Length: 497
Image (cartoon, one colour):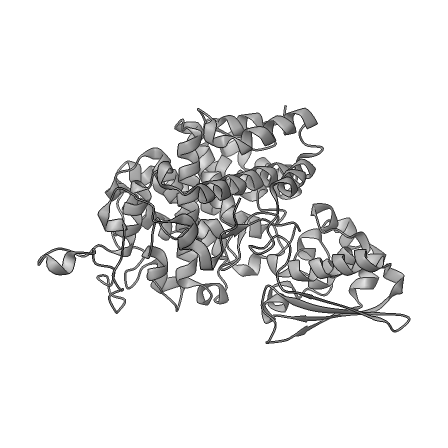
């Protein structure tokens, strides 16, 4: 599969026809943030009296007009990879303490058993099943990531879409189309307010993911344009997630709740529960309330031509994405020089400010806290040569050898280092210095995980939860989701027997 980067969108994707002339081009954004500050239809200036179409309405129009056949092949492929990575992650997280607590807490209060939970026997009602799957697919911090915004779109969008697909039977092609479109909505919303929104303390996966979840759910349910406008508006009223939650179970609560709320919004809208028609762009709407930056062109420009979902990436390491360059550098130096912890005197890191802001925990006490410690991440990468879920458990975080090496890691902010980079120097006891500079970590858009690497990751996550034969059947089914008559066969095949 050809990799799509920011410079080659138009060459690779071409201009997709959505069957609606209004979607083919967009004029400049009208200045100001009042309710009417939106985008006019392309030809409205030549037709006196024609009303402008707002951002929320334009987005709803795009969601409903989009067809599977309009998706470029490379975008479909990345949608399948996103789905594949999600299913493995949801199964891998299904037996974690966070998920066990959620299932125990909600089991007695669920409605009819309408939808399955990946890797488990239980079946819950739509919204609670989506919540649990959203939690389990994110709990390892091993899910897909849009590096421009640090959004993990799969957990909220796919959790919502799969639950609704069990209630409203959907072909694999239509499911994949809803997945890509929902992902596109979430990521474009993120582009419009990042980084200001994130800097305020919002967990952007939840706040933007809920709109993507509503779009995907509404697409599968077959909402009318007015109903889709209302669904997006209702979803915009439920932004969920604060960065203070990072390092606790609350972090995975956020995409789970976004998935559930997205379905909630779509189901209400399907029965004509109304909302403002300009909930995204209005003066007191979503964008102006949660961010000091609003760039509506990021939401509406080149819809159906430029695909943010094609920039989705997949983690080789089960922790915050800003840690990946440091882990990559540590593993490379360890393997190249056959390093042992006892040889190391000091590890010097030069990092982007966001690394210490997000992952500056020097003495994590739990596995979840370890996912937000650059010191722990470097220590386990050097000792074990890996950074999967097994390296972020309470036991490993408290291991004396890990604690000792962690204390030798010194991280210094360097404004010249980008968020996707790291400069690492390891000083050995014999005074030798080993150096590595990571420009793009493995798993990034520039150094993507291969399909084979994703399969290995999937099998490792499913190990001990599903029998090997079942895992192999599930892997094949996920890669071939487009050909399924019923997309929900996937979650049924992923149930623990």
